[in-house]
Image 1 (cartoon, helix red, strand yellow):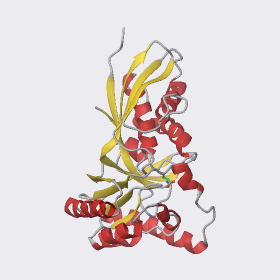
Image 2: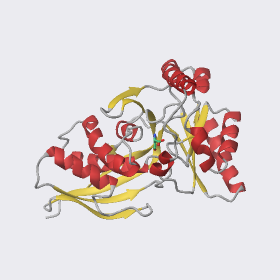
Image 3: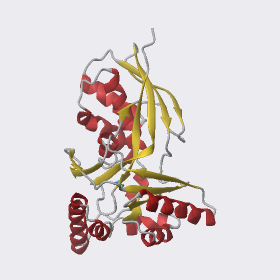
Image 4: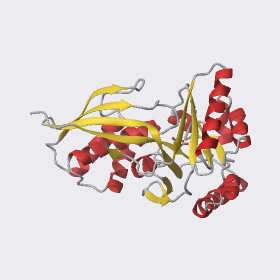
Length: 310
Ligand code: HSE
């Protein structure tokens, strides 16, 4: 007899937040991955269907949701358990919005819910990381942690998944634009120089540390001075059409900060309220329309829940 299906949702995320390469990320509302699944008598993971995404593998050993679900099963230790899933991507992949992380998180959350929560939510992090690291070819939790746990997450150490929650001021809204071009995280990482100068290290670590203080104290002027990326953005921004124009417009319109979302090509503007975010979102879209690039805009507060059972 077929078991009852359940549905889980894992949100899109914005990693790096300018000065926190591989160490900071936040979750938003709206875009994300839904997975519907049920337990089966056939041990292991099966992916029945993927809708809404482009060129994603149905082979569970090559799909981030499948890999995370299998990591969950390995840790759970009952070899008779099987799960079948249908993945519905409500976000573009290769967009810089944590698509592979959302699949990975949803894959292991699905099993945790189907099996009535043998693990605490936070304990799912390493399972989701196995899926995410397969896709990005690196081990960074700045998408997976906020996707699973919600809010803003600071990753002190990726190897041990030492993850700390940062409580942001109320009212922050994000305007995010995705120009419809695809960029793979693995490729956007491969172009990065492995060395930085001492001066770059000092500036970036001072900005990251001060950003945490600014978020804690709701100090928007300090936040604006900190949301600067001296290391990664200059190496990647040329890959993103109209990046400088959009960034200049967003700051002019009152954004607290504007930079590349994750590995790109999406661009985020962090704003103190929804009105500013909506205005910036419209102008982002207009800039891309002028150069005949299709784009999608998301306006969202910070998602404090993270992935959840629907
Ligand atoms: N920190 C990662 C990067 C995020 O920028 O490569 C990828 O989404």
